[in-house]
Image 1 (spheres, rainbow over the protein chains, first blue to last red):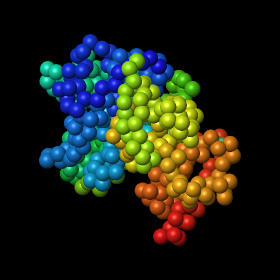
Image 2 (image 1 turned 45 degrees about the vertical axis):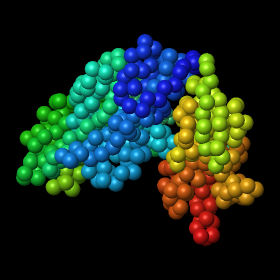
Image 3 (image 1 turned 180 degrees about the vertical axis):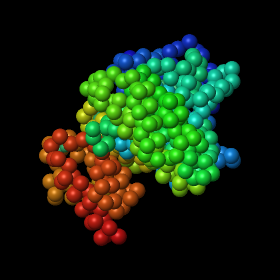
Length: 291
Length: 159
Ligand SMILES: Cc1cc2nc3c(=O)[nH]c(=O)nc-3n(C[C@H](O)[C@H](O)[C@H](O)COP(=O)(O)OP(=O)(O)OC[C@H]3O[C@@H](n4cnc5c(N)ncnc54)[C@H](O)[C@@H]3O)c2cc1C
Ligand code: FES
Ligand code: FES
């Protein structure tokens, strides 16, 4: 690992100033991706900028409108230990509680998981399904974008030089809605997803018809994938196994996976279907609890 | 590279050290401070042999920069016993032979202590789940899990 300087700004303005001093910067949240990348010379930096002392990035709250605002650097364990968040945003907890083991969860942040932009990242499909918006800051102000527009390829996000992720904002869950995330790994814990999937559905007043839906899958394309065809197969239909199977087929069709040591193309397409169906079952159960 | 001055509380003592920003906490513990109880298994976050407690949470010290511990509270395996009196976890690991080569043991004990501090009466499933980031190539885990459960029982009996 090459030598670098360490800076720990206390404010966003200090961070922006440090990011425009001409040095190559690596941002450090929990470090569970970036420290290993630097050590293995997969990445080089003149300075490492620790974002954990910037209050906005460590803030975690349910906002007045019932939405959830997650500072980009808040560790997963802090999120899932919050009982109110666990009750209102269980799909966030699905992801936060299975990223790594205890040692990883005490440090790893959702902001880091998203910015690292792995196609297999376990927070992203669930955040996409929940219509998460990213608040991105730089010296010239802040901008917001839907999370699905953030990814450019494996390990590549759409941040411009001088920008950092401040916050993830999840809108308040609608009445009769629920979201769910799941993944497949060969072990019980601690592995990279072969495929993962998140889903959200909202039931109509009748409690049976699907009024709104969103499905996202991971590890089956260069970036996490929204599956509009799955949503189409769901919206206006009764929330039952037949409908879910059709959405699962749409996920399998949308998946363009690679074959590697974790799984073949056929297995991954099959998993995209199965995990979509399971995510929808979980989402339906939560939508009913939320009625 | 200029070395950075860091002040931290390490195993209950105020400790100052100089390190390079690129040095991991594990490296500084072992190479700069002579605390070789924390082990390097993988150096990439997977094995848990380097587990330490940082501000109340168990973390892999190979995935922490030492400079990040400015003002922090750090407990390593060297800080688990009280003087000459072993922690119940250490005593039970010995009695139950919950180790073979021993490389993974400091990490398991530190991680288990973090669990018992937080949840004094975990069940077997909880112990196994909590220790998923600690790898052992020798024991097959059963003896380790039994030792943690027994230490939990003993600690309860004492209160
Ligand atoms: C043993 C082990 C197991 C793991 N298991 C899983 C798993 O099951 N599922 C999974 O998805 N991942 C897993 N990971 C990967 C990793 O832990 C996660 O991606 C984690 O969420 C990263 O968060 P972090 O805070 O540690 O990020 P860091 O390592 O600090 O940062 C990650 C990347 O994001 C950038 N970054 C960080 N914060 C910001 C910001 N505010 N703005 C802009 N850029 C930023 C960094 O520069 C870096 O490029 C595992 C890693 C290890 C070592
Ligand atoms: S040496 Fe740190 S986790 Fe293996
Ligand atoms: S006792 Fe040898 S690795 Fe666990």
